[in-house]
Length: 139
Image (cartoon, rainbow, N blue to C red; front, side, top):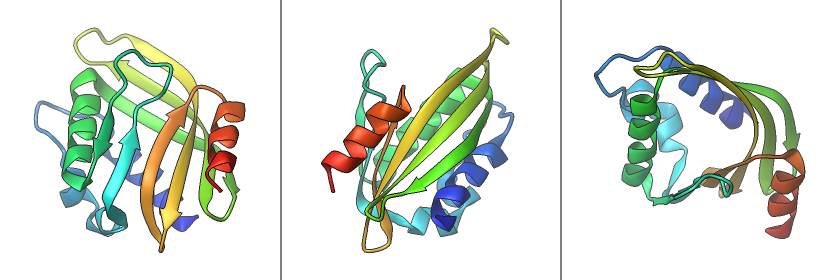
């Protein structure tokens, strides 16, 4: 659970970004070390052209995309449910579009899957029910 909380601390520490890429490996080497080498970061199933980022270096492409799209981003965990093999986190996202300064707020439920104490998969879902179903299906 501490590892999951740390993930949101790091995302929120990036805060408002400029033109320079904030590398998550440099920002939080402790969190970076907790990612399995074969980690899979899956885009939300309801987002067009959702991608799967495989491996630590590929996940940096996801972070780069977030920083290019959003000038400011806060991902607030509201409820954390530990299922043992996975942790489900209900969140509230508040972001400000880069260039447009358009604010958005959205709900998302994230699932972190673990193997040997490392994060092996991470995926966001539009609803808590979908996230719990996905987490339980992989038990």
